[in-house]
Amino acid sequence: MSRYCAPCVRTPQGRDSESEGPDSPCLTPLPGRVILWNTANERLTVSHRSPRRGSHSLLPPAGLLLGLCLGPAPLSRALAQRDSVARPASTDSSTVRGRLIDGHTRDVIRGAQVEIADASLRTTTTDSSGNFTLAGIVPGTQTIAIRAVGYAPATWQVMLKPRQVLRHTFELDPLAIELPGVVVKGKTPLAERRFIDFERRRHSGMGYFLTQEQIESSGASSLVDVLVTVRGVQQVCLTNDCVAKMVRSPPGCYPQYFLDGNESSAYFARHTPPHDVKGVEIYRGSSETPGEFQNSNAGCGVIAIWTKSSP
Image 1 (cartoon, helix red, strand yellow):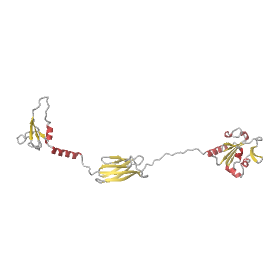
Image 2 (cartoon, rainbow, N blue to C red):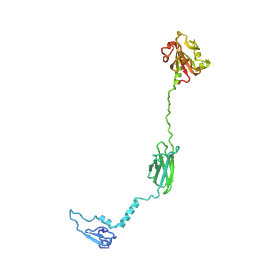
Image 3 (tube, helix red, strand yellow):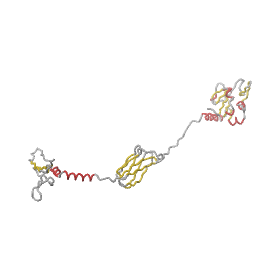
Image 4 (cartoon, rainbow, N blue to C red):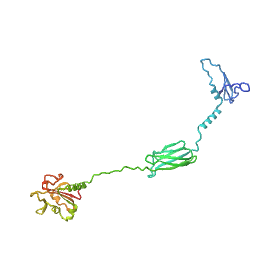
């Protein structure tokens, strides 16, 4: 392989120097000749004419010849020196390898932002396992800041030695979120709604009402015995069965019974045990009977019985 070098200008010693060797320094090229050296350090001189106007010279520019004349060894040293300046050594940098968890449940925290506030402001995020790595940190005292959605942000002061790999488990506390008050509204049970209506009708002043306390204090063994304690109600016995009848009702006109809000037969209703009854409403004629108990038999009176175990 050959390389070339341009002839040099007159030297201070007063003679022309044509770079007597391949490693001799060259200054400014002289027009007209190029000197080549082969691998055996034999000099070859090439002459050429100056190009005519409009033509192109085959000689490389003078600056390029001067650079080539330096040879591969000086050029390699120059490149190495340039690289050493451009890329300073960072073999003393430290690394932090951490794992982020919930301080209460010990669950890993994913997608949290981790930052170290050194000159480079390095940041990263935790992976699906809560792990993170921050490398290339300047040794010394550094501050690690971590933020995650739903958690209070926190910082840690760490002292890093040159080339140290710090491993640590970091914990965040969940934010205390105050929720607005919740008002739970539910329907009143059917039995209670019926008794509310019982009390509403009792305070209306229409009809006659027997409460659970009155029934229990009467000591009666049958419901008919309780009913006949009401003014305007009488007991009528037919064969071996006694029934309640309104005094103002004509013969054979017997009251309509309601059991827990539903129409019922007289036999079944009047044989309800008194200790199972919570309240009784008695309407002695259609003029007293409220709309919810009005039917074709309301003219003979209405008796509404409410049991303790109503559905």
